[in-house]
Length: 398
Image (cartoon, rainbow, N blue to C red):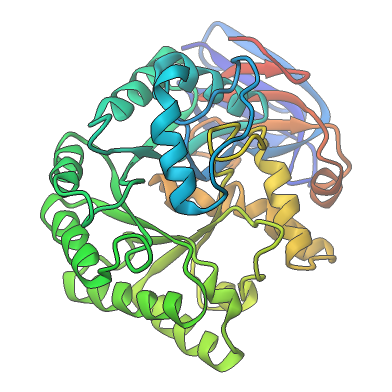
């Protein structure tokens, strides 16, 4: 691969630098105007002094579900979790869900907005089996790995109430899924102990992670956190378990929150949120103080659950900032870090930043600094993924 010099950019809004890329990896970050090529041919790209951020990391997506790029699909079905599940199961076939073309369309939109890595939940159920995972894997290959996709095998229709799903999750883990998922052990399966025991057995045996959707609020949610903490510690899965959504955490009294935060930190459990506007704010400062990882994600994008979403993770970071009342430059920058460098662990990257040794995923924006970029959400002037330019001025080049 040719050497690339991304010249005159400002990583995180700091001093102007030249970023030298070799074989898809950042080799050097040096003062602007001082980089010289070592491997011919050398491609030099003028960054024009723009703000440079690492590629965005979408820590919670559902890329197998979307009808993005198709004709408009009107919202239908009952507006409850059970109702949405039933509606999706009844309608998905007519829209080719899951399918390679649909996944490619979503991943291309991710790239256009600067997302270069994602953890995606992919439905595994008695209707589709593992075909969704196959579609997502093929779609990522179609794009040459420009977006790195980590798969979570997700039992959207339940686990215990659907005999055979645990076997499918086990097959998915054996076939290479990085994690397996779960869904509301209490309110969906009505048997949280059995669901979690089954999931943790697979994770422990197959050496994969766990990422559990948990929408239940209040003490019902807190009770399930305690079950997850207990099993995480007993199975030695510290650092490999994530709770997605976890709305109850923001609803509990301060003392109860603090107690749970201490236990979550001890168990190494991470949190993924899409910062929905009507949810209770997370105790994010307490989580940060205890090094509890927080990842941001888009959730579904124009799917049979909701017509909303456009794949722009910077907008999700802005939503997080607004939901949690962030105002200072330091806090606004933290929101962007959650969508970029701090999200490395959600896609199993040792590092993710504009630094030597990191994959060359760089996003340039016309912004004065990071807070300015967050509050204005400007279009992406350039997106580099793995050392290749994949978008310019908001338009894809691949």
